[in-house]
Image 1: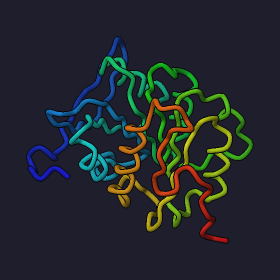
Image 2 (image 1 turned 90 degrees about the horizontal axis):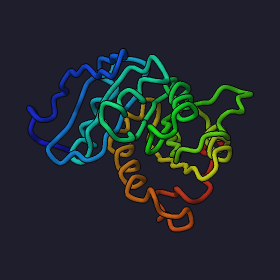
Image 3 (image 1 turned 180 degrees about the vertical axis):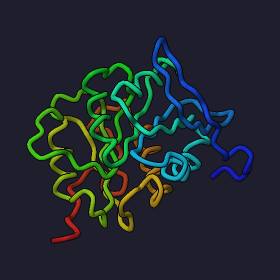
Image 4 (image 1 turned 60 degrees about the horizontal axis):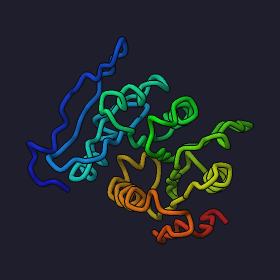
Length: 209
């Protein structure tokens, strides 16, 4: 956590590329090397701020209220590099579309508490590296849904942590940031060489039995 309050404050930023324009919030520090787009469906400052403050020492964090699957692509063009897309809850549906429409714009797709629509069969076509993050106490997404999604997307990883409920970017910011930092450090290794993190490489137990 960055101690300097002046550094921690988010800066409003207008992200523009060709005819597209996105109003966003930016958290960054002098050592930022990776751009992480945190996409939510709600108040950006409230929902993104806690996890952004945990991540900003190493990353530039762009918080957006996701309105289009092309928004993360616009940020990628603006950043001149593929971005990590972390989408929470309902924003996950558009984030998955981004991964299908423009996989080259994403370094990785991270889905927090995202419950896919029943009957959807598009997820198996996602080629972007995927991390599924699920809180064991969540009522928004079940354990079974998280495992099913992990199994449908080849090479994806699932992390389930205790004492984490809905809105993990706000309510479980430290755990989510630590999980994501581990994942980004491991990214690029062959799947069999991923180190274990909080049971990431083993079948988690269903807390509901």
